[in-house]
Length: 483
Ligand code: ADQ
Image (cartoon, rainbow, N blue to C red; front, side, top):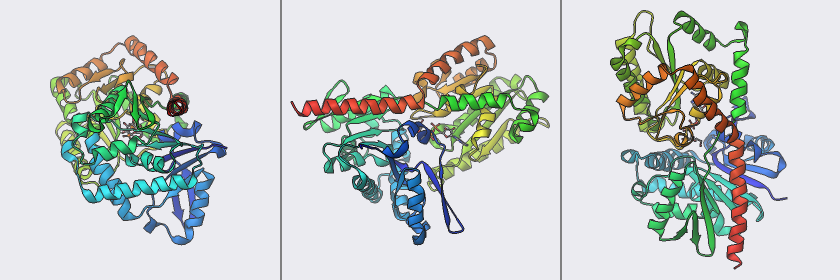
């Protein structure tokens, strides 16, 4: 029977080794959830890195690890510490990530890490080739694996390959600065279908293909040798039901059932019923605009001092890529800004910013979403931004205001939120003012529309749309080739 093979840098399971024993725990991230409908039963396989380097895995445990992963339909690609450094922390996160998010000055172009990126992509391709039959469908994910489609295509000319990029694809003017720009495009063009979150990323990619490779592009089809490749946008959704059901369940909890965090939030609400909570949740990443947001918060309180002691900013930042220098600098900058602003503005009864630097369990995320009057997300660039969608899904009474950066892919589908330019402090301060004062009926009418859209185009629909489009494209390609 034909199967689907999903490939991503990380497997959707976490390995835990304790006392010589192994357990594999499924991750709860967006991608793992989204792929549930595709990755089910015995007719699919997920290939990726386990998160542990070869040096960290005792040799005698390898068979146990392999069988624990197999129980979750997963198979691992083995990577040494040096490979993880060059491929993941190196080329992926010091070259591609900053470049594709328009942080050109952070992008490092190092031949060594490019060579390791190529070699590791080949490892992933070999892992696929070892498991794939010609009639299988391969779905490759994200910027760490952009060369894999062509590496697989070279060995299996007829196999069906889809690729989805979870981050922005930058404009031609940015992309052309990459020394290995042609190789990256050629790598991606091994696919039959290349998917992006937005129409803009799709157009940027097509423009680079046309200008750098001189290929014929007709609407969103690319003609390469005897093949036709489709490029399209598939805005990723969330597991809407999971978030809205959890929020409903939270609203029915008795005092005893509430979490400590929820009790603390409730206490603050009761002591100042007019006070408003602003919430932001992101990985601690320079693309998310966390430092700018803190400065903008200070600016807001200067422009509208009547809100001193009446608003509180809750920042939840999940630690991320702390081996990369820019992330260490950002951590220091955010720590200092929070310390300075709180130091200067706090009163006996008011701390303006609550800052959590950690990952939080799902249950606490829901506490924060449901207790916050305003979600305030200001990425400088973001492929999509699922937090914006999660906040809206948890607003069971339909109140709440979303302030969202127009630089996030999700802004395209969330026009009913207050869209801001993250560099325009004047506009941000005025939007916060507008959000605080927005009549409840207006909040409800905006969120009703947003919720309907998010419920309909959920993550399952996203995955199914991509897979259906890949099947159609393969048929079109075969017809084209048999002309
Ligand atoms: P990310 O950059 O990680 O993803 P995002 O889309 O916002 O960004 O997803 C983050 C996820 O992590 C959300 O589901 C959120 O709930 C969770 N999360 C964030 N902070 C957390 C915390 N402190 N504790 C627990 N959970 C936390 C990349 C791209 C995005 C794109 C996604 C999906 O950068 O632009 O939307 O992939 O394609």
